[in-house]
Image (cartoon, rainbow, N blue to C red; front, top):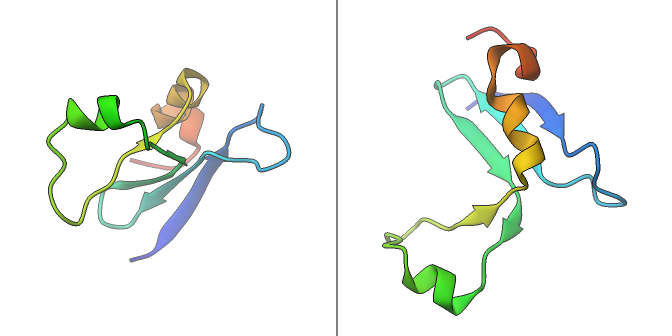
Length: 72
């Protein structure tokens, strides 16, 4: 898998997290904050081998063609 850096959270200090990457497989990798809230996790059906991360709304802009700066 090859990764293309898209963006780091411009308002996160000092960790610069979350971070978004685009893969060469037509998918995204999201580095975010691990969700550990038992009540939130209980509301989801999370299969073995998957996890949940949280990112702030301000990162959504980077999922658009204009915001991510990489071709489709």
